[in-house]
Length: 158
Image (cartoon, rainbow, N blue to C red; front, side, top):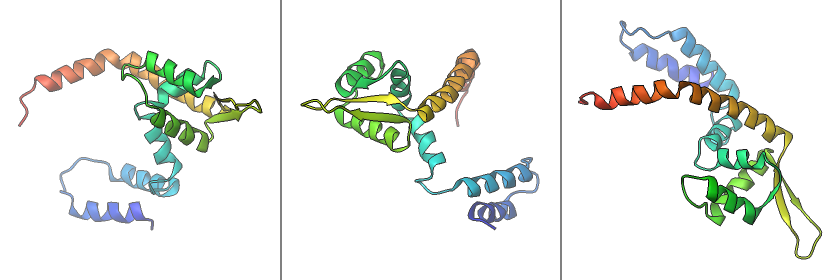
């Protein structure tokens, strides 16, 4: 038995009998997690972390419009972002992470000085297509989400 499954069994032994959760679905989830990998550096964790960070989605959406050089990309992201400017260091780190995972391609020219540009790879385009589906889902559910937030915020909190 793998790590997640073993830990889940220990939790189940300590759970109250009247809790209504479905332990079978949790056992399935534990198997999925053990198969996908549980380490910090596992692709499933790192990709979701990238997608959910402050800059990556905007970078992917920007690169969908074509290849861009670092300085221009930084200015475009700064102009589009409600977060303000992205620092050169953070942009470089994000681009390296996306390149490392195969989501973008870095091209260096033979010019003097060399010119570097970034563009989406096929894998990056595929990721962006899935992310756009999530964006559309959020847009479709936006009113419900806002209503839920308002209801939650208006409750007396203990």
